[in-house]
Length: 347
Image (cartoon, rainbow, N blue to C red; front, top):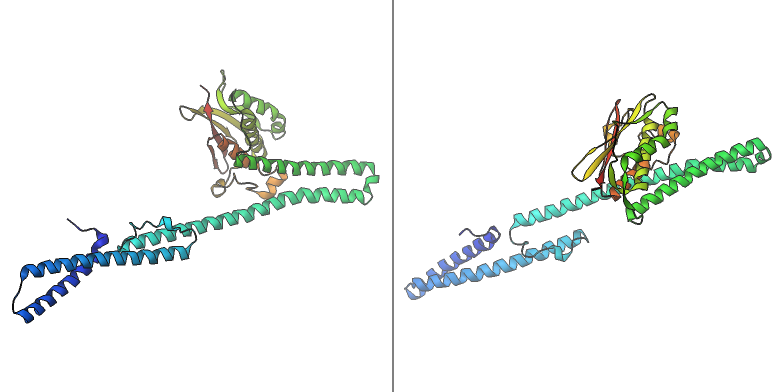
């Protein structure tokens, strides 16, 4: 039987001690008595080997375990004693090296994740600051102008109050959107799951945004005629919000005299895939992975001119994930973008 690799060190060390002791015993026995008892010598050697093996294996294993455990505890407060299985921490130095290497890799990955989170936190705070600062300063400017005497001019007063109100509406919109994302993330916002016709919902959204689309010459249409209702399960109000956000984005960033097309196909036996395809400028591949982040804008200056809180796609993602469904985005520069999400079929 091949000995386990973890006992090689103790086996070899015991063998060396036994051989040395056996040779010494042979010389001493022969020198003192001029005789040689082979059976006694073998039994003595075997006893020395067993004793040496047990002592070396236990002591070395215990020694290494204590030292490695101390290293783990010194390196990180996350390394708890219960994570160090004494059975696995043996005299096999290769095993120890692998465990220490894995520990180091895990900690390196954690550090990288913390750095990414810190970078995201700084960027998020900067974006929040910018989004809130712009309408706040706008409102403050109009109110200061009015307080300096412009309030006596009826035309200026009405115009400035109207513009200040627009700025406040944008602030309220940002705060409400942030609050909704927070509720979705924490699970506070309860969804009212019921059956509804997704075709009818899309048509209603198209009618709602028809005027805005016509102003930019964009046609809103379904890919084909849907004669029968397509029933899905979900929170109708939240899914409507998802569709409104996606269609509004296609209008904002679509090319003039283009179209936005919606389609409904089978994704699986239990899910439909709802797609919205536009004919806009498209999104660069390196930026596509970040479009669902809060306040992330592909072209900041152009996006802010279009209005909005910058939280639309983030809300879309959170609503779809709250339904335990998936959302997808793909794009090609110069040809447009396609946003799609799954919904559970009603059976």
